[in-house]
Length: 332
Image (cartoon, rainbow, N blue to C red):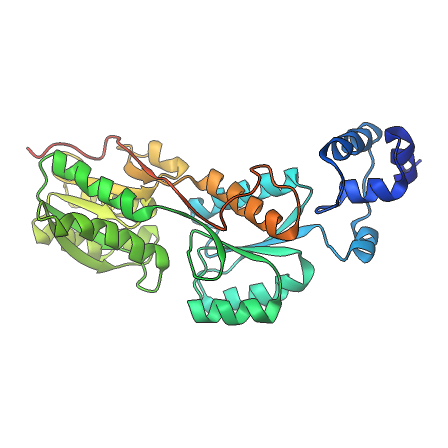
């Protein structure tokens, strides 16, 4: 027979209404009661009826996550982190891929908002004014992940410091002329990363050759960007992200240029594939999983659900660090 909320109430020694609150995201019960009720529900195999609970609480028990491109492993890892933390707080997650299209991103936000309690927007492409206008329109708590914007709760990484460390590493290896292959001009992350690279140029220690903006994909590195890097006379290159760096290395190899002996390459993000590449990629490591979990904690705080990390600033900036692998070497 199907286990009911009354069965859980008897097993945990509380009222059915307390069980309902304990199992609902944002339910106002003590941590001890919540743990006792959830343990009883797990033991009995109770499956809550979300639709019925939603009619009572006005909550769906669901969060929406919108990413620019699920084919990019960086965003796939973000989704896993969001889902893992959300599950621990009693939420289900809807994921939508905007396919790097602002119109699709806008449509996804409007479509998901009525079905969820809150939204996590990962590296949203919309302008600040568009986000603020949309925030008023959808009227759902929203957290930005890997994008900082006034008026929004957000979790970002210190990309400026990370990219400054990347160029400083190349300088320490003897490189004095370094190319930078940037990302989309409209991207907040692209501006932050470019600022970090430029910080070292302003110090006068290195010359930075700005190759231009490319699509943040493998083809972005394979196309003309790699040829421009080679023609510039640079002995090293920093790429907008790891995927672009892989494209650059592929093109360099096809042109007979050895990495790292003749050209050092640095990426950014430290996706899982970076350590498996040939050669393994030196890259700026962004705390993807932790940042994703922190975004859910911020959202749950706004929604009134006890978050694992407790009270946190509404705009969090996390540290990055450089992972040195085999794609960089001293100048011969």
